[in-house]
Length: 245
Image 1 (cartoon, helix red, strand yellow):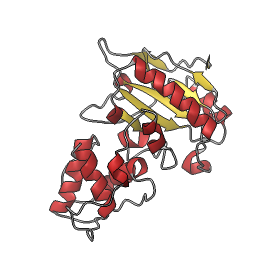
Image 2 (tube, one colour):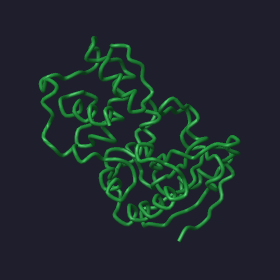
Image 3 (tube, rainbow, N blue to C red):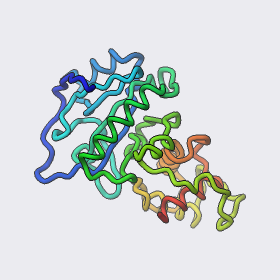
Image 4 (cartoon, helix red, strand yellow):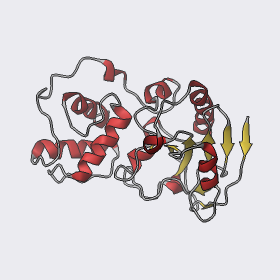
């Protein structure tokens, strides 16, 4: 059952726009009431299509045919107007600022059901089910490393390669660790593979603050057991799998 709580914060999609992206968020506020107040406040100018509460209740704030204002300044695979081509789902969670915690089973079940319906209505491929941190890595951390990306993929929502669980590939040096202020071709390789996956990053060959932000975003989604911004052998291996897929 989906209940409607209309938000005024939306506008028309561009003529002929195709919805091909699903962006997941957490509310990142102290309680659900504060989050809903903000998402429906015309002065805030933010919204999402849906909110999923921790008890499993689903609220529809914006019709899917309209452009909700959830991604902000963002980028993925050559496109900057992510709002114009996406559906946004907010999962109630206080987030890293107010006591980040695991997403309850009831909430995840409700999310799975909601997302499955969205994917049935729109041509959204698995690789375009993204976190807000994927499309805005220097600004956002949600839905974060506690979101069950593997479980979502098992439900047909997003991607989680089976090979993530296999032994590390011997193709790259296991001792290489790239971190801030590194320079050279290994850094450029990391940046190039992140860009092939879809992240907004240029292959400069310098491991700067932007590169670290993008590596952290990649880890939050695809290596949540180790979110430190360091490209170690396992992060490197998972980059290979996704960039070459």
